[in-house]
Image (tube, rainbow, N blue to C red; front, top):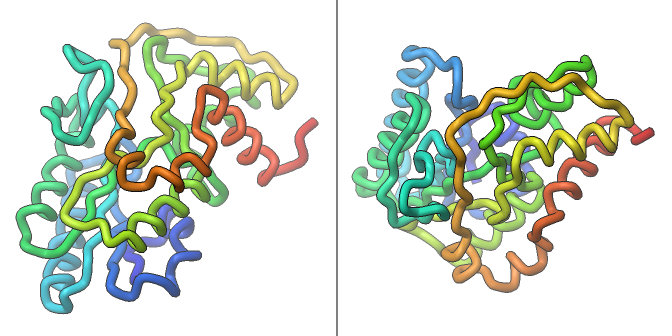
Length: 252
């Protein structure tokens, strides 16, 4: 596997680098849903066009990482569980950009697999990403909470195991939500971080439009055994947070 990119996702993919020689994993570009500039989107677009051309030339499969956040799927409506068959209602420039890049990949003619990734958690994450940012705020004693927001956390190691299984299966020319299937209210995530850190932070609460959850029916249909082995369930997010804090430093 060739990995395009140098950030958290690219770092997490390194254990797969010696496998799947027919794959180019595009793990570069914009990594945040807010604050990105047009120039950032343009850089990702240009790099993706180059990668698509390389995959067409070599016949390799392009693994593209999109998002399963409300930025792409929108906010509920008649579908409380977002699935890959749409329709999608992008709610942010980031979501619209990711959808446009998906269409570039699907329309290119290259063999491909589009993964709509939820909120991966693991070592080497950047401070602006969801859980590192939240932990940092709690440590500083003041945390911003968007009441109504929900986050589907998935451990990076679990995400990589599922990616490995999808590629070994030969999945291609599909779009798949890569998530745990359990969207947790942000308040509950903050509660658990506070318990593990042994502190209570002042909360600045803003109400936002309620977010739904992400369907993992297609993922479970493709990988019934592998998804069961991950132990996804209502308390899975707590194990993800515990592992993240333990990797960084001993728990109190």
